Image (cartoon, rainbow, N blue to C red):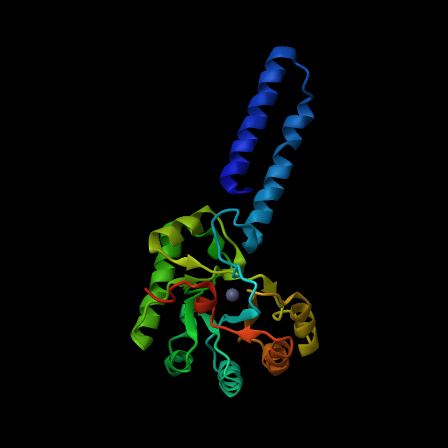
Length: 258
Ligand SMILES: [Zn+2]
């Protein structure tokens, strides 16, 4: 399996072999030693940015099923601008979803968080700050952030989230350590709507509907107007294709709370 550990072993073996050959026969051109790290660095960058790669840590991104069932997930809330209307649509359509909340959005939005919970949706952890440099933090700082989200959520709904979605979908060794220490279950997606850059709801739909398959996990953002606009048509399309929408913890058969 292509993991960070295996890539390190491969790099070590290749470098060792080259050094041995160089020592024996002096036949390796110097530029090979300069170029060798490039594919390694590209591989590590790909692994960090591709949540489905499981390169740094196992992340559940879809269910292994042949049943026509999918899960809808929203990141980056709760916030007053669009989350209430998204909840209204989900309520009307009787769709259960997951909300991976940013901790700093919760103060002043406790009522909204409570509603997410009472409406039957699951609340996940999406870091406290969602800081642009979150991936540069040490494991200790990451874990402190995750725990402060749990504390904040627990103060409102009385439960501590176990599902964690990495900010920006980026993983690295520090995050792996934080997740292991905090006993979180990292959850990704296998359909990325790119709704944060879409201009029209049709664009969001076009990026999702061709990829719907059994066990899929769809990534949306309740911070986006375009997502709100696309949601009714998305739910209708999923159902027209004969799919059921299931809450992510049930779809993946994992515990949502500690
Ligand atoms: Zn996010």
